[in-house]
Amino acid sequence: MVIAAAACQDVSFPGTTTVTGNDLLVLGLASSAQPPAAQTFWVSNGAALVRTLRHPDPFNTLYLQVSFPAGSLESLNGQPLATDDSVQVTVEPLAGGYGFTLSPGGLVFSSQHPPVALFSFGKYADASVADGDPSFPTTADYLDALEIWQEVGVDRWQVAPASQSAGVDEVRCTADAPGRYRLAARR
Image (tube, rainbow, N blue to C red; front, side, top):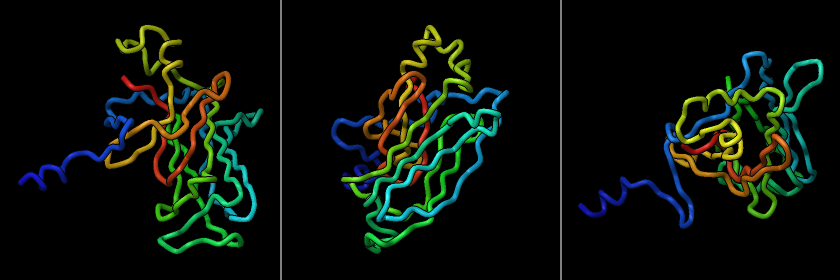
């Protein structure tokens, strides 16, 4: 009985907190924003690559930048990847908000050279999602609380590694695994 009960508990690592999606308030995308399109592209293990998802507005406003350093790919579906190997990767933005899904799911990134994701939300952020939420008395409080969250289980989220402000209206993190990421504040 004890083993079964332990198996049903959420797995978390020391120093990390996991929450459900209902505990997060994802930064919304303004209704005036034209959402960026998903991108599928090849990442070569032997070269650095930077991909950007941009709003299709007259200024090509940045939504998300994902940087893959050389040597960032470790394995795919359990098969080690060499320096001259490439993998087709897809980055799909979250509809109506700031987030993305990184795939394929069987891809493992190098712990020494993982990708880095950067959200830029100065022009099209809809912080009104926090209006009336007692956790955030002001819009500034909400924006200051934004972090990038990574899904680590079915509807279980934790702050992504190295999530931090990257300047005015920008937040970055290490995208150390494929999956879903959200720019959100914990309620």
